[in-house]
Image (cartoon, rainbow, N blue to C red; front, side, top):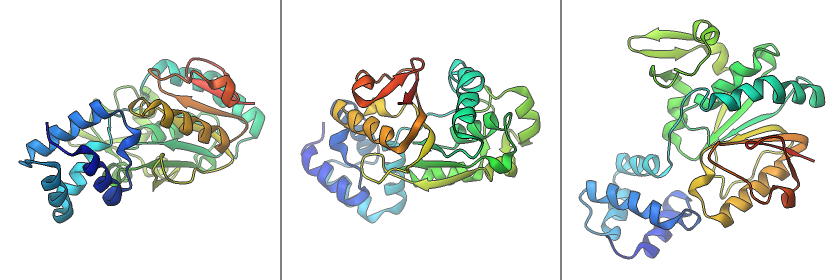
Length: 258
């Protein structure tokens, strides 16, 4: 175990604007120790110096820190409910000019899945999704839009045929889907949130934060939504105080702003 983690957290905040105090310490520290040791750093101080001097090492650190596990149509039951209930209700309440935010979007699987899901209800030219992540590297990957077979395994066959082209052993997503999504760098713990959103997705990310940070994020999501707007969270997550925040629970992973 490396020493002076408190000092390291302060240095990381200065370097990356990522506040490690908002993450569960035991879990995050174990991940960082593994990476620092792998790069032959004998102390946090030495590792910080390495991060300052080596751009590739710095990018590796941010990428490692921001946990990226993503795939298209992850948790199919949730997407089925989106398709059958949530999207029709959003269109009924707000029309077809919807503002959609995919927060902590990782490599783009989720916002591209959203674009395809909405394409059943409206022309692609009507679909505008803001997709944000703290990690520049994954945003670059998202904009390239090249995925392996495992990533796209959950994509409905009709969309696989229509929106993907095989390139070697990988699959390239169509430009017409890419045009529906605008990617931006964003820190959920620090940056201002978009406003007047009709739908916000933030899935399988908040589980890594402290209870205090989670509470703050969910309150900010609530403030970002229009009346009757919907928040879509991950299947392993829960908002225990959703009533106090002002949400109505539509299901275990969909919450509507009243």
